[in-house]
Length: 399
Image (cartoon, rainbow, N blue to C red; front, side, top):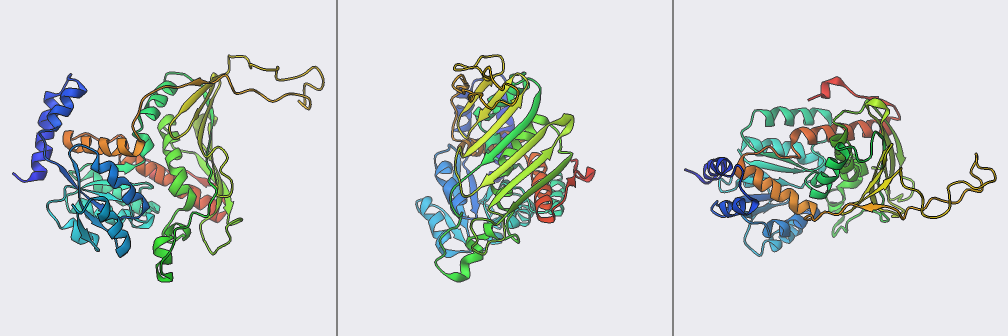
């Protein structure tokens, strides 16, 4: 029996044994399994940054790294403490039968082809967000995974966050009441560029600046929050509109340095997504607005503000000019109810979930379908901004 069949069949047997057992017993059984050998394809900032997490997770092992840029490949190999093989061509990595799974952290435009080739090679796939660039590649991946006997996870790590899962449960339980809107932002202050040791490497290193390779801020940042909204509403957007531009960092980039995109969902729910690169106030934030209250979620915390609780300071309106609010004092937001829950770093948790899906033959929470839905939404937003049009949902994208 080869190692991949051992892992899969052993995991399936354990899944049967583990019904009704504790997490401690679960971990004890997992220690009997062989390591899952992972190949990292793309050792830029994200791919290299995930290696320490993999090193710390039981039964995961970085077996190989691949990158077309030599110094990037060396950075990735260094993180493995010399325990991984290096490849310049990802197809050579895929040909290695000792590798069970791959983590794809390449430029956005390369995701689909590498993932398709990895599936053909019989590898489990963890594909970083956003899943794929363009409608055609998204559909190709959906069809390929449907007919493949592998685990496929999309790298929307907040989908795996135990904090976010708890928040989803609270919302589904009626915590905020009837949802009216989502207001999401991911603001930064910086040009988003990486240092380039040689001008010939500009587009390879700063691929996020060029439309040929990148979906810009919407694909690289907002897609996480789009995935969250889709999860909560369990619906596809009716239409998308948006705007943006290269208005601050006028350095030759093609993707926008600020975006403002509005998605309309069924039942009158709207979801607004904003990304700035010249102001970082409040950074990352998701605001879920309902008739019973508001949940404000960051990367590692959540706070609930009830509509039923009184303001702790002055009333909202004074005695004069109460309709227009010209004399009204501002609201006080110091009455929030913190949502307390212990949780791992979302990226580490996502990798742990990937391992468990492989070992126990389970469908990942963040799978090819959830990833595809977010990718479709991203492409709709890009079309809306670049073509200055309102983009309706196409029923052909209903997977």
